[in-house]
Amino acid sequence: MTESAQMPASDDADESVDVLVVGGGPSGLAAAAQCAALGLGSVLVLERESDAGGIPRHSHHTGYGLRDLRRVTTGPQYARSWVERARAADVEIRTSTTVTELDVGGLRPLVHVTSPLGRSTIAAHAVVLATGCRERPRSARLIPGDRPAGVFTTGSLQQWVHLEGWSPGTRAVVVGTEHVSYSALLTLQQHGCDVAAMVTHYERPTTFGAFRYGAEARWRAPVHTQSTVERINGRSRVESVDLVHTPSGRRRSIECDTVVLTGDWVADHELPWAAGLAMNAGSTGPRVDSASRTSAPGVFAVGNLTHPAETADVCAVSGRHVAESVADWVREATWPEMGVEIAVADPLVWVTPSLITDATMPARNRLVLRGEAFHRAPWVQVSQADRVLWRRPVPWLVPTRPLYVPTPWLPRVDHRPGAAPVWVTVR
Image (cartoon, rainbow, N blue to C red; front, side):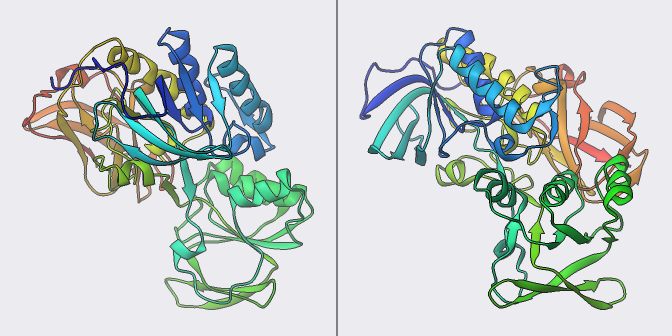
C-alpha cells in the first residue's frame, strides 16, 4: 500500500469538493449519482457542452437503457433520465465548463477549469475521469483530396442535424460498417439523404447481421468491402469520393455531396496523458485496474475513456461500479501499488482493465477486449506463468466489436508487484 487518502482541509485551489467528475455523459452522471447515494459528501460534475447527457442527447433513435434502466428509450430520453437521476441525488452539474488541466503532483488532485465565469481551480479528494471517446476525423485518417464542406463524423452529423436543424445533404457515402455506422445511416435516411455506399477496409461488415441485413433490405445501401476512400473531391461542397479496392487495386468514383466518417474510436485522453498517467497504448485511454484506479492516487477513469467504444448503458454500469472504489478512497482507505499487467497477443489489440492490484471484480465481472481479425468460435485462454486460469470457447471474434471474458478466475491471480503478467490469448 502506498498513499493514504487523509488530506488537508485546504490547499491552493479556488474551490474544494469531495468527488469531482469530469464529463457529464452516461458514465460520469452514473458515477456521480452513485457516489452521492453512498454519502460521499459534495459531488460535482463538470461538462464542457451546454447541456449534460453526452452523445445520446443528439442520437434520436431508440435502443438506449436496457442494461442500466431496464427499459428501452430514445437517446434524448435516456440522457434526460441520467441528468434527472444525478440532480435528484443532489449532484451539482456545471455545464459550459471545460477542464483544461489535471494536476496530480500535489496533496490532492487539482483541475484547472475555464467557463463563462472565467478560470479557476478545483481540488478534490477523488477525481473520476469520464471524458468518453470520439471518432477519428478526416485529418487523423489521412484522407487526401480537396477540403470542401460536407465531411462529418457521426457525432458532428447528429449534432448539426438534431441540435442545429441543418440538412445533411442529398446523397452520402458512409465510411465504416460498425454499429455507429448504421446509426449514421438511419440519421441520414430520416432527413432525406440517400446513402450511395458504405465502405469498409475489412473483408465484411463488422456490425450485427440483423443491422446489416435490415439496412440493406430497407434502404438498399451497397457495401464496398476491402475498400478505402482514396480521395475526397469537391470545391465548396463534396462532389465525389474515389474508392480503391485494396486486393485488386481497382478504383471507382462515387458521386455524393456528403461523407460521414464513422467509428475508428480514440479515447478523449488528453487530460490523463498530459498529467503523466500511465496509458494503455492499445485503447488510447489511461491504464486502470479492476477497481477503475489509474496510476495517480485519487484519480479514477471509467466509461469509453477506458474502452472506446461501448454502448451508453454499458458506460453507465461502468460509472456506477466505480463508486465503491471512490468510497474506499474518500473514507481514508489506501491506494495500492499497481500490481500485475494483463497482456494480450495477436489478434487481440487491447484489454481493459489492464492491471490487477487486488481481487476486486471489474464492472459487469468481465474484461473488455478488442481484436483485429475475424474468428468463428475461437477458444480464449487466460494464463499466468505456467498456470491456465480459465479457458473457454466464445461465439466469435469480430473487429470493432467487444469480446467479453468473465473473471471468476481473478481471485487466483498472483497480483503481487513483480509477479508474472496475466496473458489473454485467442486460438
